[in-house]
Length: 230
Length: 230
DNA sequence: TGACAAATATGATTTATATCATAGTCAATT
DNA sequence: AATTGACTATGATATAAATCATATTTGTCA
Image (cartoon, rainbow over all chains, first blue to last red; front, side, top):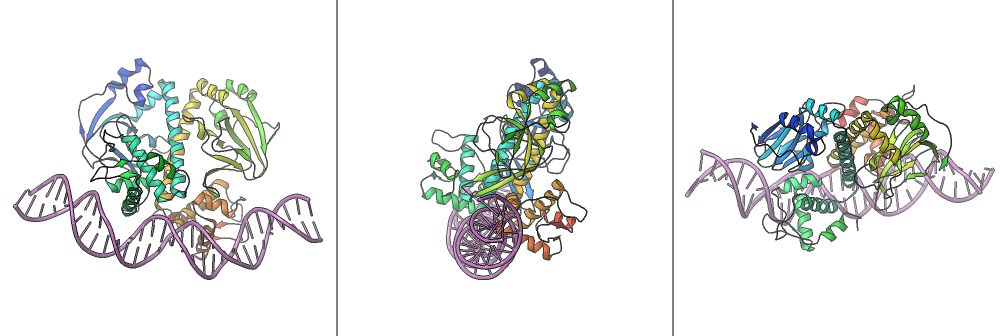
C-alpha cells in the first residue's frame, strides 16, 4: 500500500454527490489517496473497520472466505464504487475481504469523518439508506439463485453482470481481465464446472471465446436461462 | 385480510422508536391495523409497493419463489419486526412475498407517510440505514453459506437461528409452530434432506425431538458445524 | 365422526456438481 | 534463454443432495 496525491474531482462518488456544496472542502481535507498493487489485500475479514473507500482506478474483488481455498466473490468494484460500507452495521468488524485485482487507486475516508458527514448531510444519509436497500435486494436475489438456480443459470447471470459492469468494446469483447477462477467464485461454483459450462454455452452459440476474450452473442437467450430452469 | 382497531403502544417498532416524540401523534393518525389468516398472502413478489408493515402478532415468512413449488425463505418475522422494507430500492416493485404462518396482526404505514417521516426525522433515516447495513451483512453471510457450506452446517445454522428468534420454554423446546418444509426452505434444502439431517443430528446427540418439539441439546457443537466443514 | 388434505417419515434411485488427476499454455522473473 | 508458477484445458471418478415413490400419522372442517 502506498499513499500518493492525485485527487479526484470530488464529484463522482456517493459521498461527494450527496453532500452539500459547502461540505466538499471538508471532504477534500479529510480524504487520502491510496495505491495498491495487484493481489494486495486492501482490508480483510475479521479486522476492525477503518473507514470507507471509493475506487478511483482499477478493479477490486470483495470476497468472503470459507475453510481455506474456498471463497465466494460478492462484488467486483470499479471506478466510482464504494467499498468497506458493509461494516457500518452493529459490530465494527469487517465481514469481508477486499483484494486488488490489478493496480488500484482508492480514495479513503476515515470512519469518524464519514459519520460526521452523515450527521451533517441528511441527504447523504438518505442516499446511503437507499443504496443499502438496493444492495440488499440484489444480495437476496443472489441468495435465491445460489440456493435454487442451477449452475448454468448462475453462469449466465455472471456473464450478463460482467458485460454490464465492464462493458464491451467495438468487437463485443467484455473489457476485463478476470481469471476464470474469479468468475467461477462469483457464480458460486468451481473453476472446472464454470469452464465446462462456458463450453456448453459456446456450443449453443450463445457466447464466443477466442483466447482470453469473451463475447456474448445472444444476451437475450442468456437472460432467459436466468429466469426459469428448463 | 381484515382491518381492525387494536393499536399498539407506539413504542416498539423502528418507526416509533426513532421518530421525535412530537411525531408520534402523526404516526398514530397514519397507521392502520390489519389482520391476516393463516396461509394468507400479505403481499407478493412483483406487485407494487404500498408501504411498510410492522408485525404486531403472529409469524410471517418472507420468501422468494423459483420455478413453481420451489422457494427460499429469507426471514421469519415476528412481533416488532418490520416487513416490506425490501422494496424501498430504486424500482418500486416488491422482490419478495410475505405469507402469514398463523393468525397475524400488522400495523401498516403507507409509503408516502413513511417517506415523509424519513424526511422529518433524521435519526429515523440514520436508524434505517444502519438497519439495512446489518441486514446486508446477514444476507451476504447467508449467500456464502448457501454457496459453500454443506447442508449439515446450514441446518445447524437454521436451528440456532430458530432458537434465537423464537426462544425456548422451560423444557428447552423451541417455541414455534413451523413445518419441516418451511425450516428446510430457510436452510436452502429439500424437506427430505432436512429431515435426514435432523435424524443425523439426533443420533449424534446434538438435538432431541419428540413429536413436534425440537430441543437443542448442544448449541456449542451445532455452532461448530457452522464454522468450518470437517 | 368421518373423511380428506397436509405434514411426517423413510427407502431406493438418479443426477448435478465437486473432486481428482494430468497435461498444456502463457507470462513473468532470474 | 531457461525456469518457475499461475492459469487454462479436459477426462475420469466420486459424492452430496435432489428426486421419486410410498406409507403413516396428524390435523381440520363439513
